[in-house]
Length: 270
Image (cartoon, rainbow, N blue to C red; front, top):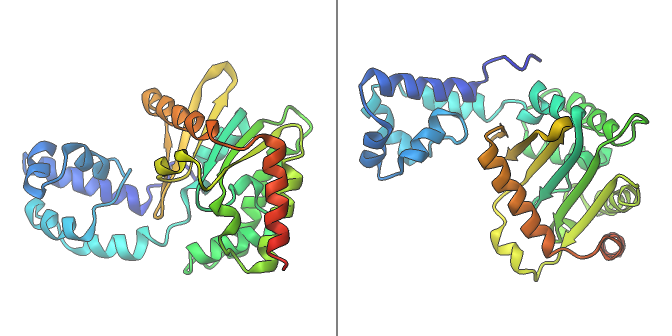
């Protein structure tokens, strides 16, 4: 798959911007009419976010855009292959010297075993026909952690709730957590759990990762229910790194985190 292919999500964003500019409207004007900020309009036009149905209902007539765009969102955007499979972030991961991963929903993709990955992908993308190809691609990504030639250091901060959320059933969860604990014993993998009672939990809004490349260049990946985005703007990357450090400050120490993961695995078998 080419990283230059225009996705349905990008197409929607470009159409919204083209239509707005054709009407000689500013983002501020559109935002004021819809009672939203101009930064939200900018997020729609740069495919970081999708307009909600109630916004589309007023936005499309204002811009003179056909409601076929709604069908594109419903039928194509929601069915696209998750953006993590696009070339850009895969290249970033392969070149990274270190990776910081925060997860509040599922075990990070780089630390998922086969059955857990299959359950996650099946639940999130019912209409994807090539499920097994996607599972294989996810497992193939993980080879960067075990390669002989300078594998990256992965620091994964995971909310305790992830350990108790049913993904694929009790056996899948028990096996996944034991696999996670085993991976956490590797020299280049650090897994730390944020306890459910930690104050940092109030700041959880969604998963993200920060990669550091040779030369100190940093990029990030932000995930959402519909899609994801590679973040290159250094101000935004720095903000995500600060959030990571805030969350990590409330984690259990490495050894205690591994012990908690193993206890949670045992609970799934009883």
